[in-house]
Image 1 (cartoon, rainbow, N blue to C red):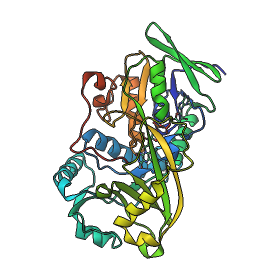
Image 2: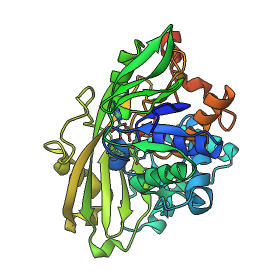
Image 3: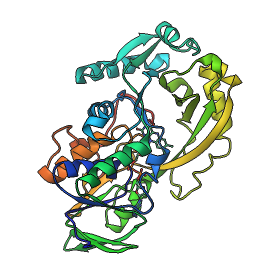
Image 4: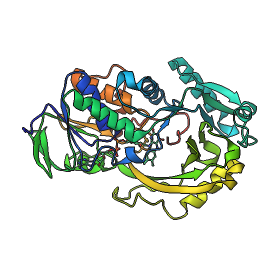
Length: 386
Ligand SMILES: Cc1cc2nc3c(=O)[nH]c(=O)nc-3n(C[C@H](O)[C@H](O)[C@H](O)COP(=O)(O)OP(=O)(O)OC[C@H]3O[C@@H](n4cnc5c(N)ncnc54)[C@H](O)[C@@H]3O)c2cc1C
């Protein structure tokens, strides 16, 4: 088989998969090169929260456009993304109420189903939650979570059905560059040529940016999560929650509850670190936090804990677009919050590459060139992960 294609995508996480899917919808057959297997990186470790609450409009718009896919998956993509509607509650401390109110107003302008509800309303929705430390929360009745590995696999399958090629166990080791243009990549399976190469390598993307000669701020971010067996008294399910006062988020999955913490996520580790086990002390801290919000969890039991690595940028927003090397696009740096926006980012990137600009959502503020220009993205408060 010839190793020449129109577009090479490095990495088969949600972002490589989504871009390949949307390119295939436009008749462009990309080659995806993946050093391990589909969803081997952050995507396969992701907590899969699907919510629209953000403090920047570009994020809310990307999440909202992606939500169109999550809730109509079999018609729009095929296969299954495992979307489960649980409702989503964003809890903030009393001092953040003005920001919360402004975010909800912005989301309502975008068309998102989001409301401000009182702590009493939260208590009526979920009597097992402790609600005495906040006055208001944002509520998205349609949100929930999806299965990230299934989501990426469904997009790759749909892309392949339209002619995309997936090469697994194929690590990109070098780039072929001539006269300031990308011409292909050097891999453990030989040379692959294309006039366009997209770096969707997640936590490893910084290494490839360096090989490309791009001077960009890029780090790795480690994040651990834990599953606990929920005591029966709490009930068969509960909403998906981001809990700012406890620096935590949690969501149900069958009889389990998944918990992640905002703090204690180290930067700068090698992304090959041990992801089969959580860091020392994480489980104890996570149990303390979940029991703060849901005291009945004290009767729960630990099921499992593990970790994962994502790429992170200084403003915790992705790098989308060209960065100084012709034909070499960046689709990386999702900073711990990239799963839920995957379907829309792939669509926007396909528009950027094929048409010269994204029209579904204006992603120009996410250009990798913003760092050199000093135009970092910022919101009302630095939104938490997930
Ligand atoms: C534990 C955890 C929980 C999270 N929870 C959420 C959440 O609830 N909601 C949310 O929206 N986001 C969440 N995130 C963030 C989200 O998962 C990531 O932003 C997203 O999955 C990144 O996708 P990606 O395709 O950019 O990267 P990845 O999924 O990491 O994919 C990159 C791929 O590139 C491959 N690769 C790397 N280098 C090379 C190379 N040289 N050659 C070939 N292939 C290569 C890797 O093997 C990998 O498969 C979470 C992240 C973690 C770690």
